[in-house]
Amino acid sequence: MTSIEVAHRHEAGGRDDLVRLEASRDRETGKGVFPRLPATSPSVDRFEPITLSTEATLYSHTTIHPNPKMGKPPFTLVYADFPEDVRVFGRLHLRPGEKPVIGSKLHVHADGNPNTTYFFTVVEEGK
Image (cartoon, rainbow, N blue to C red; front, side, top):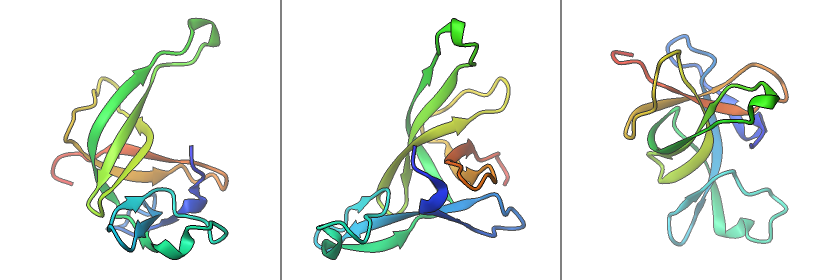
């Protein structure tokens, strides 16, 4: 998964755990790509840097069930669509008993670790 280096924290109503992912947009087609193209990419001149919103929509999901011998719990992977016309792959952290629902609103977070990755959570209704 992509490092949090492609994101920056966003103060949103006192929630400093939300982050905004960094992406690129093709200047010709307008199509966004994630993660942002590095400055050393031979295609970098074709793209402009963009910053994604803190909220996305759940496009699809799958639940991974690791081998029981590993002792790891199941986890959910998702594709999330951002308003900037960018689709991002990542983990979805669910509350106990919560199930992913296509079309749900998602927030992007980081866990505070300097070498962390981003993850998504479902936006609670009314928030």
